[in-house]
Image 1: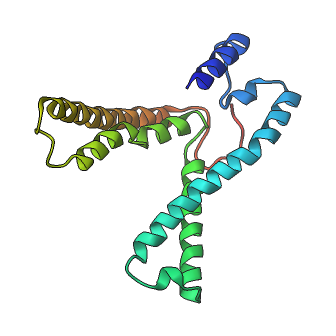
Image 2: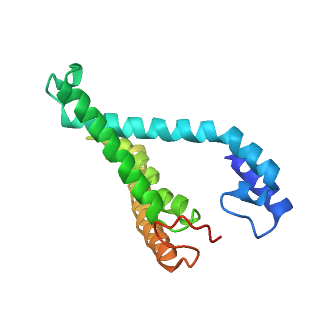
Image 3: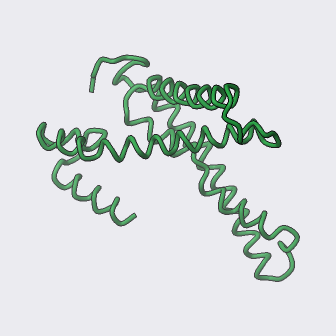
Length: 180
């Protein structure tokens, strides 16, 4: 978290309030190209890992309890390719449908329900012990509050992101034209 704060402060200090999104767009042309060249492999690898995990989770859920997961026949391989291709098409449609890059991270962040997950995990791990002692009661209340805060942030974040996407004059959906 410290790295993000330091980066934000330095970028804001040298660029000012008119920082492009992503911030590398505010650098000069040569520096921007060099930085994107260095960052591109990391961005691609991070995206491929997330896509692979999503495809694997869906594949395992579909074929749970069968021997299909452990076979290398046309059905298994075709299912894997179809699931992966379908997920990448969905990701592409979402990325193209949202006008401008500024709104995409806020939409993703509002959908990610991380604040509520910790509370849910604790409540699940301690099922039956929630009211066994004063300390457990306090932890139960704290984790229930974390779930409530997570739900509120998710709903309000989705509303704010949706409003920002709807009101964005910067570009249109599925447009290749750079208008920013």
